[in-house]
Amino acid sequence: MLILKIGGGKTINLKAIVADLKNIDQPFIVIHGANALRDEIAQKMGHPTKTVTSVSGYTSVLTDQVAMDIFMMAYAGLRNKRLVELCQQNNINAIGLTGLDGRLIRGHRKKAIKIKTKDKIKLIRDDLSGRPDKLNVDFLNSILAMGYVPFITPPILSYQGQALNTDNDNIVALLVKELSVKIVIHLLEAPGLLKNINDPDSLIKKISQKKLEFIEKTYTQGRIKRKMLSVRQAFANGVKKVVFADGRVDQPISQALKGKGTIII
Image 1 (cartoon, rainbow, N blue to C red):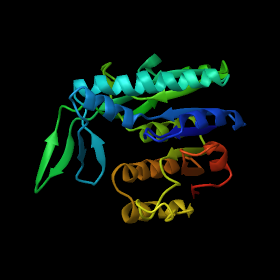
Image 2 (image 1 turned 90 degrees about the horizontal axis):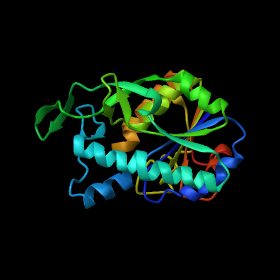
Image 3 (image 1 turned 45 degrees about the vertical axis):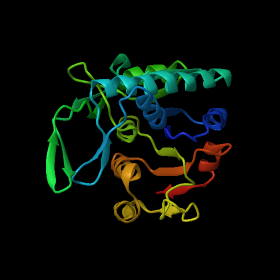
């Protein structure tokens, strides 16, 4: 089983990615984002995306009820259904799902987020976010058995029946654990993981999983820093190989499987 994680950046080549899916010769599941689209919609609606940084240095998006509505429009609506449409045009029988559908992915709502603002520590208690911890494995396996290709995106479902924002990489880590996934491919707006985010020639070609924490502390920030945390969790959950590759090029999946990008083993 392979998991393909499609980033939500504006320059990700969705048409090339979907066309390349036919070259995958093993069962796979797709997880996708839509952060650039979300931010664009939020700006137009006069409710721009707000991010905070926790005391441990990880960034997250603040999600009130309006932000959740925008999130659903971008992730579960426009991006998910356009990807399914592209798949149907390529004779790939995809099905679009969120964590809400069929109680596919559940999790507990965060009681509070501890953030640092200037010199003060602040607790945010009204955020609609959580961490996924339960997968409806039977439901997902039945979809795969019927020959459908699942395209999964947040939100997830709380145990009180409420939609929750979550980081897609946490969903990946959960799927790795529950489905015994061995390979995860992340498609980014970059050649792979970079030592210098502003220098595409600073690609880190290979990383031992033992050095992940060092790489995270030394070279990453923002969203990539959080992504590295979830990669460490994926290895703890049993994954054998993670690849960060360029999602803007032709045949991005095939190139990743051939060793392009950053390989973590």
